[in-house]
Amino acid sequence: QVQLVESGGGLVQTGGSLKLSCVASEPTFNSYAMGWFRQAPGKEREFVAGIAGIAVHRFFTLYADSVKGRFFISRDNAKNTVYLQMNSLKLEDTAIYYCAGRIGGNSRAPEEYNYWGQGTQVTVSS
Image 1 (cartoon, helix red, strand yellow):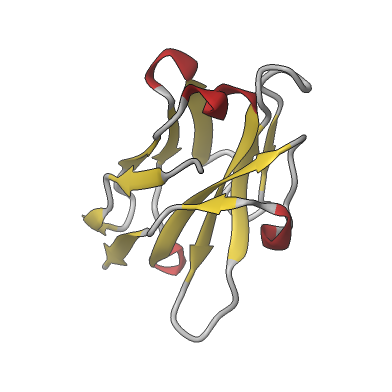
Image 2 (image 1 turned 45 degrees about the horizontal axis):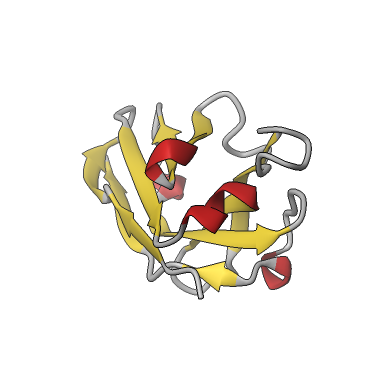
C-alpha cells in the first residue's frame, strides 16, 4: 500500500508562489501516474495537474485550464517525489491540495486514482 504525504502548503499573497511536494512511501511510485487535485470549501474536488509514470507516456503532463501556464507539475523518481510549482497565485486557488496516484496513465477523474495523501492547505490572501 503506497502512502503519500504532501507538504509545502501555507499562506501566500496574490501573485505569490508556493511549491508543494508529495513523497511516496515506495519506489513503485515511479510507475504510477500522479495527480494533484484541490478542494475548496463547498466545492467538489477538482483536477489540477497530472504527470504520467515512467512506463506510460513518459512524464506526459496534463493541466486544468484554470492553472495552465501558472502551475507546473514535475517528479523526481529518485526521491519518490512529485512537485507542484504554483506561480501567480490567485484568490480562487485557495483550497486543500491533494496528491494522488494511480496505476496506469494520466487521468483527470479523481475516482480513477487508487492512492491519496491527507492534503495540504493553500490559502491565498489579497
